[in-house]
Image 1 (cartoon, rainbow, N blue to C red):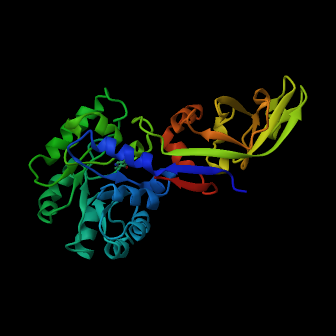
Image 2 (tube, rainbow, N blue to C red):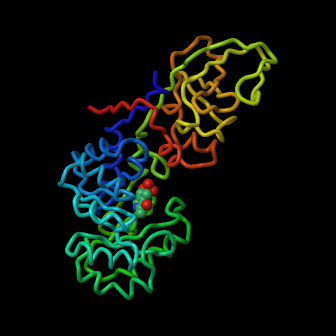
Image 3 (cartoon, protein in one colour):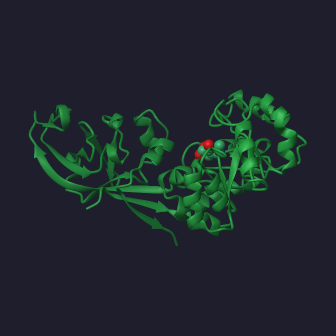
Length: 344
Ligand SMILES: *Cc1c(COP(=O)(O)O)cnc(C)c1O
């Protein structure tokens, strides 16, 4: 018995990609780093390529190499971490397109793979990846003479539409790139929602493909956890490590097969609810590595499984209880779940 079944709705992912693409005149790529946010980069990219997506992005070259094996030679795979030391053979053999982040990377790329496609990443204030103003000013002419496929930057606060950082970064990106004659990209999911001023020639949604905040589309995943065992507790009895919960009434407890090793963070204790149809069943006590205890007293029956992610509750709602984002809930979904891909 596995720790549960993660159902990945490829139709929903394609529908979200199309809905985002319909918001812009720019080309719409797809970001499938971190195994497509935990949903399976190969399957997701194949479905999107079939729907017409021609460009994918990953975080590191290893992800790009694995993706190339499943999507074949016809799509572009951009690598956000650029051309790192040791990546040259992978970039060359698997036809990856590094987004060059620094003069160091630019030198490495031109010396080791002259003529091989590349993009440029600029830093417009996030201070994470990309060339800053001075560095870009120094290398722009030579970099542009080698015809990069894309010049991009990334917004730090795009999930807050009124944040002054957004127009600040937009203005800086214009100053750094106006007139270069190369396709440009600034927007991830949040940037798409900021409107066409932010779209340039290509947009790069990741989380939006999963229908999670900041874009509320069709949820890409569902998660059902099998019940291993049910038992009655008398008032005063306790459940879980550290006697983390005590029954105040005659209670029935279901133990489900999944825990913090499967992305159900310990920090969710006290905030986590599972569902049987429309009936909420609160998780009680501490969350173990492989198990969660759930109060099913009000259910009146012993269920075979309980739903963690489904119509009643999406990854964003779960995230609130752990003080995090749907991004982290999705990407933390562990390798132990049975994955079932649904599509018509
Ligand atoms: C992760 C990432 C994206 C996708 O961001 P979402 O918010 O998931 O849409 C786009 N661009 C860069 C540089 C990223 O790191």
